[in-house]
Length: 325
Image (cartoon, rainbow, N blue to C red; front, side):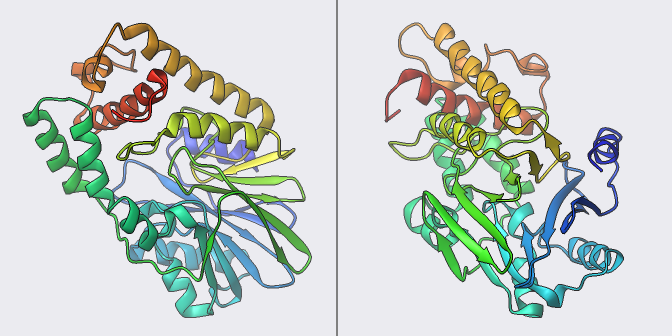
């Protein structure tokens, strides 16, 4: 299954739903109009009903594709008893409320990513982004331009109400014959949670995909250290003993511990590169334009520059070993 899924990913195609192991289904959902081709949600068969991991965009095309895929594998939305969300980004929370409306399913997510909690502590997504851009030290016209571009593409529907917020740490969830451990793994967001099926699978959300780096959470408050969070989270995933990783993008893969070590080394190298570039006080704006990206800074698209600038802010926060900008 993974080889076919990987081939589809590299061809920028959306594969059909397929079994990962007996009783666990990968269900890719097309993301029309997004730079991401698809998000993969996962369906777990249990004696206590179906468990859904993540929930695509809040868009009719995603909802329709999801229902159609369930039909092809012999399941119905009405059988879903629980929705476990890895984190609060829009391509993961989107149709959770619709599932609940059809089936009565419980919707659970990490406490720090609960929108009500996040708004009280950090503010809405765009508020956090505005704060982060200010902290980068970029010129005012650059900050204003980046923020305006982000507003144009923002698809953050932040109204989802949870039936339960999962605390930091580990918590075991029992679904009849299946046990799933919720493991708090901040770094990509502050409440990011991976779900370890004790049969040997870990659903990694956006923390650890098969290829490429992890986008770090937005730095907006004193004490934020998403790079340090991610390095520690990768250790936690490595030590779970999982044999298969099921990320929300790209494709499932094996050698989970090896991939965790590889990704940790990559991000530690990023931190080290920032340290090498810093000689005295420096801003993320200074550093980001001197970092090695896939293309020279001036050739990057506006969205990529914004992502990289905010990512650099997080790296600089960790590299400096300090808790305030």
